[in-house]
Length: 202
Length: 242
Ligand SMILES: [Fe+2]
Ligand SMILES: [Fe+2]
Image (cartoon, rainbow over all chains, first blue to last red; front, side, top):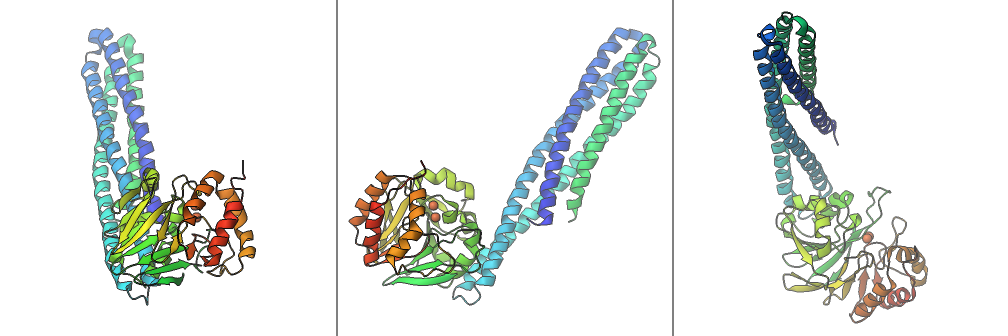
């Protein structure tokens, strides 16, 4: 296995694991949003500004979960392409060896067709891999965008929480957990993108 | 890869083996081809590592597009783990292999090659006007196992039966039978599981007119050594590991 292939396998495996962590956190956010909603409801007028924010957080968490789902499916495809590319590359190199070893054989030339075919299939896989990587990067970009938005909302939530009297403590905790979660998602997704961006132009 | 013509008539049998470039950690194996006018059959084409030298050697006898048939006597890696490479190199080929191993052998990768499942009672392989018989040899050593008999050339390709694990560069043919049994004894006692299966096979094979017994490892038996082998095998207790 050459280094490029190894790196591809590692990249695909690492994004799969990062993404499963993102999924867990996105679910936590959606739970925090439900929690905040309940508190804001009890706080009544004191947390008026907080209520639309909880809806927004919930919406954001849901979208993130859906998108990560899509990304996961893409990652599985990417894994399959990587496996196929690995096999096609292996065959291509073995076919090259046949051509090298069969130098004087009467029918040596008949191997050139399969060699060419194997090369084309290998190149097709490489192109496919790059296309899938570009798709995945775009989807990851969208998740990061969501995470950034969530952090802005968390900051607003803190301000709103400060006017919620005796509910200040619990609402602030909610805002903080949303902020932390969004931060972690941002970092995880950033790592995925870095792992993949190596292959965008390779 | 060395090649030896073992039959020349209206068609040819060629044996390949004793590959000098073979890594030491893999067992040496004999591959055979049957070459008719427009077609070529590979018998036990060999392991993954052997694909390139084997294909290069076959190209001295047939172009890729005339390699139309592969036969796997059983599912072992030394027999057919090269399948995925043949699968990508050959454009129009069939793999004749035991029916019970189909789902297993496909793990090696078999997409473009047509898998022709051999039922338990055997069958035939037709190559141009030549008809080869597929002889059941179950439990010798694999539970789904076949040999190929060519009534015209009087050759029985006997898979792991008659095999010997020898030092590199061993001669192609058995010369001193008694000395050779020492190289076969443990292999047959340990790899062959069933005395009952062995008896059934010997009975079947004694009815065939055989000049050459061609195993997948070690040396080939010719003339009287074929009968000597059958007698020796008949008297041998197998399945010793239990
Ligand atoms: Fe075997
Ligand atoms: Fe074998």
